[in-house]
Amino acid sequence: MMSSHFLLAQQPVIDTTGVVKIDTVTPPISTEVIVGDITITGNKKTKVFILLREIPFRTGETYPLSVLLQKFEDARRQLMNTTLFHTVVVAAKNFEGNKINITVNVKERWYLFPVPYLKPVDRNLNQWIIEQKASLSRVNYGAKVLYNNATGRNDKFNLYLVSGYTRQVSFSYDRLYIDKALKWGMKIGFATGKNREMNYNTINDKQVFLKDENSYVRNSTSLYSELTYRRAIRTRHSFGISYYKEKVADTIITLNPDYFKGGRNGISFPTIFYNMTYYDLDYIPYPTKGYAAQVSVSKGGINNIINIWQLQVRGSGSWPVAPKMFFNLNVYGGIKLPFKQPYFNRRFLGYGDTFIQGYEYYVIDGVAGGYAKATLTRELLNFSIRIPPIKKGKEAERIPVRIFGKIYGNTGYAHNPEPGDNRLSNQMLYSGGFGIDILTFYDVTFKLEWTFNQLGQNGIFVHRKSVF
Image 1 (cartoon, rainbow, N blue to C red):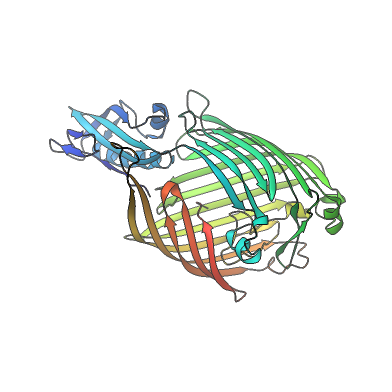
Image 2 (cartoon, rainbow, N blue to C red):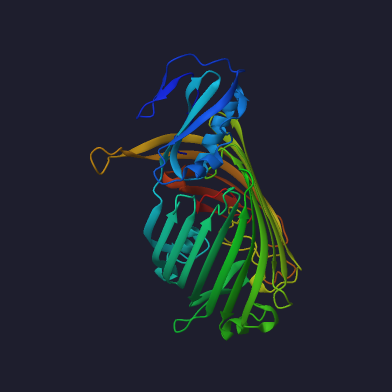
């Protein structure tokens, strides 16, 4: 986690190095104070109103000093959780009678990343390295442009030009606010691609692939438009519509007639969806205290070719239990209706970030179920690596590094009314293990885990960390 803090003192002065100098004594903590001017510094690109949107107090409001002190910390936390800044300092600038003037100093991150793109296509690094022998033929390569805070309004523009295993072009633009009241936003995206190899079935809880060196076996196109609403600070609602089109080679349907419904080799359908996310965390990229929740409801298709209702619920809670130690509980539940779905819609556990630790080499198809993950974590090391400045007069950069040790346990279940030659669905699954998490620059978190499952298997697994 990046270094940041808040301070409160009577008549403090913040010099150019960020040091707070106290001239007089802080008034009693129960004193009623009026919020005076709020001065923003350090924001070379980010618009002032974007920062003020995250601050839970306004000029002219009155609070007991103790309450305002806590709101200083809330403001610091909210600004850090925008992921726009390396550091944030919220502090009293000076007192004018019972009025307190406040300063907010931020240090902005880099926002533009035009970088090469290189990523294995398999579900996780373990599957690519162990089962696919780190084959370069199963790697996507190309270029990507990630432009965060593109206009200074906390908006995001992403462009991907991908070749290799998948030929794909995609872009998305997310603007958090489009109205003067800073409540409504929008997001749009488009992707089109084609593959020479694709997963067409699951046998013995493993993905089965077909590859054609001479032609593409899958073509797909998707686009979406989304309207977001964020009335306060912690909760965000989104309403949207998407369109998806996919066509596969006739060989796929011959091998698995149930890939699409009715033995079709192509589908196209719209989806309407609603998402709600709630974050009350000390630090979203790696929370040690607080709660988060996500609810998603969608309806795909308007006829019997594609007809699916989906509900997904995720929750996460973190509680400090001792100095530098915290407990985390992470839960997920989902259901797809009606239960009878083609293979295309039966992917459940083991895809993306929805997985049970210790079962990384498997997929568990189904239409209902979920998991619970419990973790006890302790911080082991917290240091930074100094990088000398490129130009004289520039401030040296520091790469923060935090290392955590942990033990954990998982349990999960997936209901599949048509399991076929798969045995991991329709039974309770268990796993547990220990590992380390490494949190470093720009919220990158690596997880190294040694996990044991109920099949008697164990191994070392590598993951990237997300809130859920």
